[in-house]
Each structure stands twice: as structure tokens, then as C-alpha cells.
Image (cartoon, rainbow, N blue to C red; front, side, top):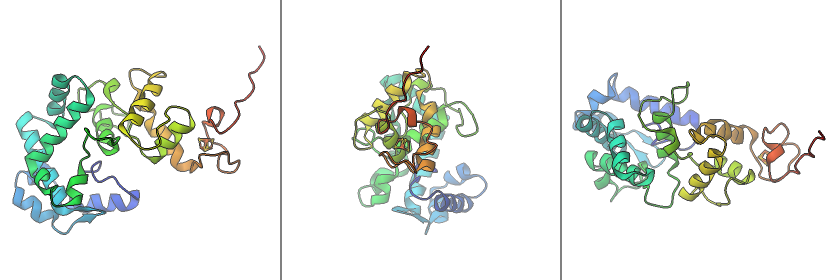
Length: 243
Ligand code: SF4
């Protein structure tokens, strides 16, 4: 739920998620076994374009996939084994979630339902899905949860405006928008530093971009203290030290 609706201001988003979780009660997965009760609990909930009924479809669908496969991770792991590549595996996983809870049908009439889960077959970087995968797959470190048996080398970095800016400024991609290609290029460049876990740099890069309010140009005030200034394309490279 958190990754699916991860748009906008974090404070507002947290409040909305806390409200949704409170409505679903102490055991959201058990509530999700009852489709009508889940829709009733989330009726009236809203965040940006998303409505309670969209979230209810997602939660019910996720629970049905979980019941059918043992866990969401088991379903995705099977998708990845069968397809052999992230994109078609994720497309299959998303389709299963959409179909199981009625999100696919709702998407024909409601914008929020259509946007709740991105389409991996499209051009988008699917940032929120990549964020979800990062949480599930990367080892538990206080941010990620490490619950799924999927190699971290299979992940792509979640590309938002901060990652795209830094990716361009550091010469990791030339993409001008948050596309799947941008995610692949940035991840490939980061894999030169850590081929087994290129996405581990995501949190640091994203938060650097946010706190620095990166201007994407040489700005002595805003670039002051930026940790990647020595390799930023907007600044001259420092002269090599003799010896
Ligand atoms: S040095 Fe400035 S332009 Fe370059 S990445 Fe840092 S904040 Fe952005």
C-alpha cells in the first residue's frame, strides 16, 4: 500500500497510510479476506487520485495472490524464474494483483485505479514498483526488509526526479525523463561500483538530491557541501594530485 500510493509530501502520505491502516484494523491481511468488509472500511479514504475503493481492490487482490501462492514473494519469484527477466516477470506479477482484486476492471473507469500499479510493459520507470521490490528484496538494513528470495542484482533503481537529476549530473544517463531506459542506464552505471547490489546507492543518492535541492547547474550556494560535486558534470574536475 505504501509504495503504491507513494506520491507527494511524505507527511501527508504518512497520515493517509496511518488512516488506511487504522481502518483495516490490527490484521489487515485478515480483513482483506472479506472483500465487502475491506471496501466498507476504506470507503471515503482518498489520497491524490486514489480512492478507498482502489486501495481496497489492491489489498483484496494482494491477499488472494498471497493465499494462492503462499506469499507475494513466492508468486514474484516464480514469475522471475519463468520469465528470466525483470520486466516480463513484474508485468505478470502486476497483472495477477490487478486481476485478483478487481483493480483491472476498475482501471477502465477510474484514473486512480489505473495508476495505482504502473504498467511495466510501458515506457515508465515504474518507480513505485521498483521501490516496493527494493524494500522486499534488499537485505534488512533498517530501510529495506529483505523478505524475498530474489537476487539484488536483478533490481532496477527507482527513478524519481531526484535520482534522474543526479543520474544526469553524474553522467550515469542521458535520459531526459523517468523512463525504464533511464532506470536501466543508471543501474548499469552503478553496477560498475557494485555488480551484486547496484540499487544499494538509491537511498543515499535520493536523499542527497532532496536535501541538496540540486539545481542541476553550477550554483556555489546550493552546491556547497554536495557530496558528489567532484564528479558532477557542472563543475570542473579537481586537478590530479602529483605522486
Ligand atoms: S554539485 Fe550541484 S548541480 Fe552537481 S549534483 Fe551536487 S547539487 Fe547538483
